[in-house]
Length: 463
Image 1 (cartoon, rainbow, N blue to C red):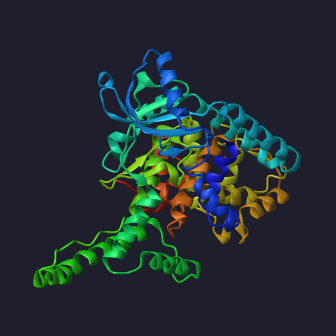
Image 2 (image 1 turned 45 degrees about the vertical axis):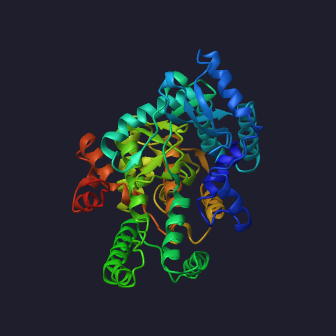
Image 3 (image 1 turned 180 degrees about the vertical axis):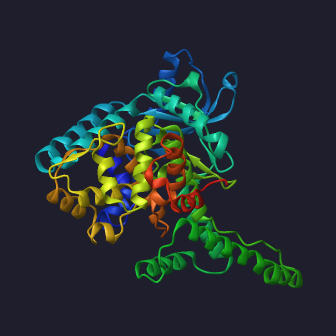
């Protein structure tokens, strides 16, 4: 189970693992094997709910899972009339998976303790967070809390499933069904639909696009630049329909079918950045596992955000420290970044290293929380860069409260990377960071000057 969690993270970047392993890693986003026999998930769900006093909760059950996660399976079902008769999805935990998961991560930690001790502290923090996933009643509480925080502001852009609390047990989670397909599949389907409408082979068009990206002919863009480019492309499609396709259909008597519009990937990514920034900076309660398999594209264009087993809570001190870190990264203030990393909570994150090397501290913080461009990594891949930093200044105490936020930054960059969009997460989150620091520490020196106006302009979302 733990290895599949790591494969999901690795699947978000093309430069983390060799290509022959990357395709398999991508499958783990929603097809991780949970080792459940046909019919076993339904039998477990009915038995556990019967033990809880709900023996006939389902009117029907779809045997084919709609998702297979690292610790269980997800099935569509319909509740019996006495429970509302609505369509739901049911997450069922695989028997014995918690023991296997604990064994996996302990093996990994023990190996790192011998060979790569710098990875042990963050792995132990991730272990602590991941082990909260095995009680689905806690995930039901997470769903309710995040819905309360997120939906009032973001309901026009996202949906989060509501749990059916009376039907949630430790091993079974029943929640509202969200219509939609995995984000990557939805974007690809729309792309192929447009290609087909133009008489172009979608497979060939996709291959050419990939070759242009790989060859550097299509340079990566920011989320905002990608959003603007897609809006222009969709406007061109609509104009083409009115000026060409519609008149031709009228003259020939052929049926007129409007061109399908492209999914605006830039806006999708900006929404993901904004929602997670709101969760982290304003509420201190966020989903620590936003990999592509946990994002759905709904028929109405909104995003369905699913799987809240990995919800992390950070206190106000850690939120303010992270907001200051974000501003310091943007200001390229190496000394302040290092100070925040090493200062004891609540002023900082309590990280320690052998030599307290400011440049190493700065590069690591930028890598995990903002970007992984060559100016930071020196052109090294992930493992080479981490090994280089460890050789220069070994970590003694990891900044534990930063670990899960950094994981979100890496995963969101991975989602963007899949569509040739390059992010600076610190820049995208700057407005949220500045607002929090202004409320809690208005005299903080990095709030001064014109940077504040730039950050306000960078704040995304509904404004």
